[in-house]
Length: 166
Image (cartoon, rainbow, N blue to C red; front, side, top):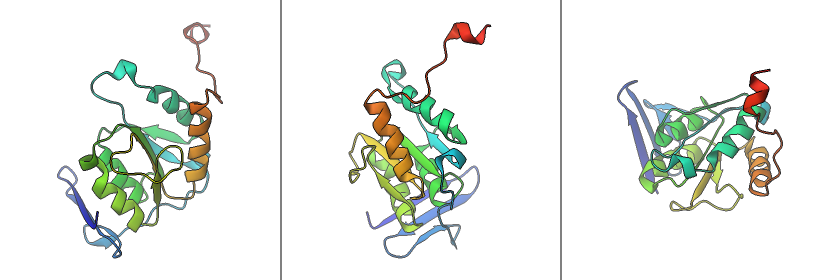
């Protein structure tokens, strides 16, 4: 990917990047955030519109929500990645995304100083089944949490319904 654009008509925001020439929002240079701890990070993720009941992301969501400052779900991976590039979000993760949903955003993140891999820290390919993207400063911490969840090492137990009624 040598160039990418994402346009948000609701906010009239035009995100653009060209490999080696930086990332821009409405022709102004953008950079990723300087947040360096997951506990202070604002993250985003998504869930599939179909077969949601089979999605394992709920386990990752719960762990991230308990350990990060917050987790949002806006519904657009393309815009979430742009927001990481612009420093509005500090990280993003999701499973089974389409290349057309992420290609431009990944270039924006790279050109804005961030990084992206698969959830195990390997180089991400456009058809990789998992994506982890961040400002670069919290990336290793995110990957450590993903490794724990993949290995069934849950850091924060899921609450029970009965505990909420007591």
